[in-house]
Image 1 (cartoon, rainbow, N blue to C red):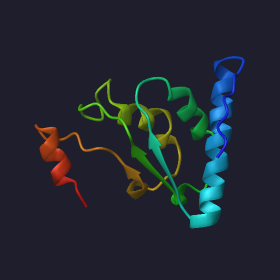
Image 2: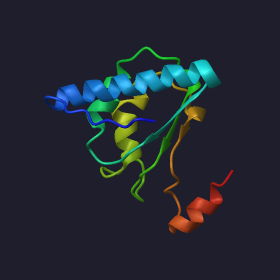
Image 3: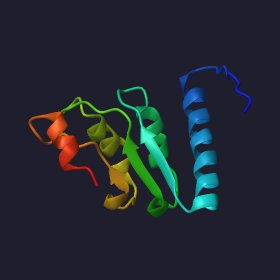
Length: 119
């Protein structure tokens, strides 16, 4: 696999290119496996990309969303990556709730929450 570096003009161009890459991978995965999984990053950096994703007409029932990064706060906390993703994207599309896989942050101890939610 050849790796390459792309230099883009500005933030809107970066967001557009990221959206293109995700959509390319999404359509290929669904065609090949009938399912696309995406691990979300945290912080405010991906917010414009999530907003762009909310504008897409996609086969939401074939998309599964996971978090690769989460702060140990409730989803309604201002620092929650889950809360931000839901507010900017996931609450605005018809993705089935069962396809959204947040990290558990509801126990007093993160280790306990992780063990409780192992499937």
